[in-house]
Image (cartoon, rainbow, N blue to C red):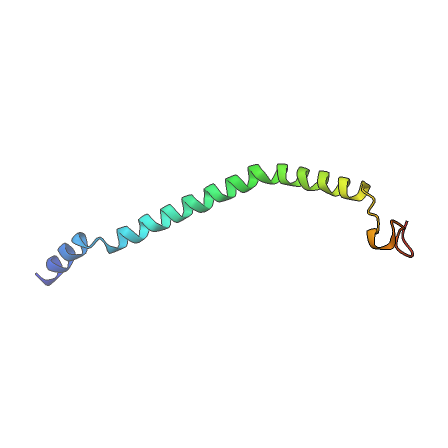
Length: 74
């Protein structure tokens, strides 16, 4: 009789089900984050490369020194 009471109590207990729901929802959010990261990373790398090229091609003058390049510079 004790075993049947314990089995019925176990069947009515839903605490574990809530935990499983949260684990599934968390896994879905993480999966969506990874998917977005994968899609966006290519464009981000291209943009960073373009910015790097533009910065390397830009000459900066030394306004404090009357427009002359710093010592040892171009």
